[in-house]
Amino acid sequence: MLREEFPRLRLAHLPTPLEEMPNLTQRLKGPRLLIKRDDQTGLATGGNKARKLEYLMADALAQGADTIVTLGAAQSNHARQTAAAAARLGLKALLLLRGEEPPLRNGNLLLDDLLGAEVRWMGPQRRIPPERIAGILEELKQAGQRPYLVPYGGSNEVGVLGYIQAMRELLDQLEESGLVADHLVVATSSGGTQVGLVLGAKIYGYEGKIIGISVDLPREELWNNLVSLAQATAARWGFDLSLGRDDFIVYDDYLGGGYGVLGPPEKEAINLLAQTEGILLDPVYTGRAMAGLIDLIRRGTFRSNEVVIFWHTGGTPALFAYAQELFKAPRTEP
Ligand SMILES: Cc1ncc(COP(=O)(O)O)c(C=O)c1O
Image 1 (cartoon, helix red, strand yellow):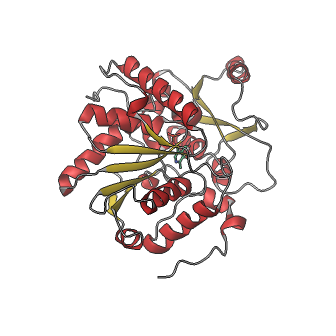
Image 2 (cartoon, protein in one colour):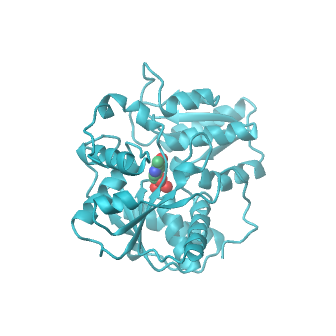
Image 3 (tube, protein in one colour):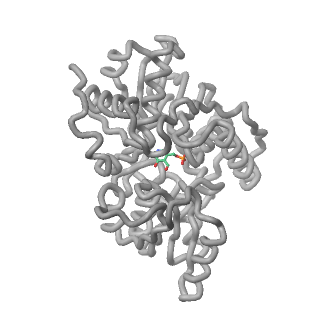
């Protein structure tokens, strides 16, 4: 059981709604499609990181931190939500972002700025070398600050607790509405969301499938990350669970042009959901995961009487950074 005494702050708007998507269901000719609205968690426009940050920020405060340091892509939703959480708690936020300072700060970057975060541009490498991060933390300490490092995507043993709790929340909602979910579909990258859901499923007895649509990593690499994060989390909190690759369903068929590259499948998914259900996806994560779900439906992966829940993980501010590519996209006929 997820013990109540795990230190947690209340930062997110929970429970998030679980909604039917009747128009999309009809358009795609089944299965019955629902959506779990973690784009509505709050913290400067919502997203999956709010759940992880409830536990990470509690840990940061317990350690006496006054500065939260985290890492990500230029349009990192995780960095933006971390900046919002830090602002709410009266802490400084330092965001170490990939790339060079762009001429226009829009999307998540605009919000980072409004939220008062300091941004440092770290160059093109996908992962900042650990010694460089250690150097920055040391520099802050020398300047008298007390930094707390939140890893990429908030995905460590502490952040995962947010999605173990999220599985409990979903199961309560399903029970209340008398529904049984056969499949959950979720975008996966640094892995904390999927690992939390899978651990939560084992702890609380969800028997359906949890399908991770990889956004950036090939299956082998993602599998290794998922299994080691799951094992580390179970060990840290004393969950008596054995975890291996078989516990994680991962599709890496939808990587398209790579991380953050918007292709026709993502555009179709974003337009389709917006124009059938009035729900906004994001260009990097949920647009790709929904494109994957649409493809799986078209291939006949699900039976028409099954219930499939798409777990919306947020990210909508990044839409504005992709305005050039998304504007005047083809209309979906009503
Ligand atoms: C909108 C959105 N969806 C999904 C993910 C992936 O979640 P995770 O990193 O826990 O795998 C992220 C991560 O940054 C995200 O910003």
